[in-house]
Structures are given as C-alpha cells and as structure tokens.
Length: 107
Length: 114
Image (cartoon, rainbow over all chains, first blue to last red; front, side, top):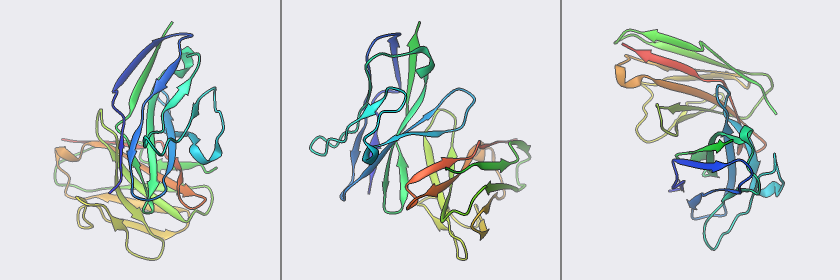
C-alpha cells in the first residue's frame, strides 16, 4: 500500500521568512511525487512534480529516497502563497494524497 | 493541460434520493477519477472511471452506492445513490494526463444531504 504523510495541518510564517512544508511517503516501488495547491475559492491545481525538477512560483521540492521525503520549500514567503498544499504520490495507477497543510503567510 | 467542468456545482438533497454529477473534459483523456473530500479532510479516491468497462472502485466504495459511467474519452458521471447525511461532501472529478499521473481537477460539486 502507498501512503503520504503531511505532519503539519497548519503552518504559519511571516512574509519574507523561509517556508518548508513536510511530506513523507511510503511506497514499495519507484515513486512519482507531486505537490498540489488549492487557493481560496479555486480548484485544486498542480504546483510541481519531482521529475520536472523545476521551480514554480519560487517553490522547489527535492525527492530524498533515503529519507522517503519530498518537502516543499520556498526561501521567502509571500502573502499570495497562503493556500492549502497537498503532497501526492502516483503509484499502482492512482494518486494518493496527503492530508494537506494549510500555509498561512502573515503580513 | 485540460479544462474540467462539473455539473451541478452544488445541491441540497433529501435523504434516500440520488444525485448524478456530470464531468466534462475539453480534450480526450485516458484516465478519469472521482474523489470525495469531506470537510477539513483530504481527497479520498472513490474510483477510476474506465472508458468502455466497469469502473475500478477503491476499498470502502461499491458500485451500488456510487455507480459510474464513462461513455467516451471526454465525459463521465458519478451517481450518489440512496443518500444519507453522511454523503454530504465535495465530489471532485479529475482527468489524468500523460500516463495518468498528472491530474487536472474540476471545480467540485458540493453536496448537502438533509
């Protein structure tokens, strides 16, 4: 079975401070990992995927197979980053989502 | 990318009735999925909607309660049958692009059962 764990339900940071949203996974094969974001009153949307190794809106995430982690990071938080963030894993022909972390950026 | 629309956007239903939710994709996609998101919780996969064959249901979800149709590569429906207040939730449709792993979501259908 596959599992995605996001230990923090809520993360509050001040504007300009670094952000790290934690994600750990459990999967027997080679995982494909994603971060999805849901802004207020908007639909869930893809933020980034690990195989792209890209930076979106200043966010990056590195897959650490040794620690089975895929933490999302941004060096300087902005108010518009406030949203719900979901880590997700693709395996066995389906996506498993974590429970989500609400990021609150304080002006 | 893909644009997903859902109808209805919300509904209030009486216990014991059924509601069919429609999902339309603006392009042909191989994989479509239905999720449930209960208040304050994450997304739970209900089933994978397979074109031309029966849907693949996740543990805890059965066809009699959540019948799904997928008549073509751009459209699917989910019916919530014999509803109870516990079915009150947001129901989301998604389309999986590439090999299915990259998902695009509809806006959701907010269902309240009285």
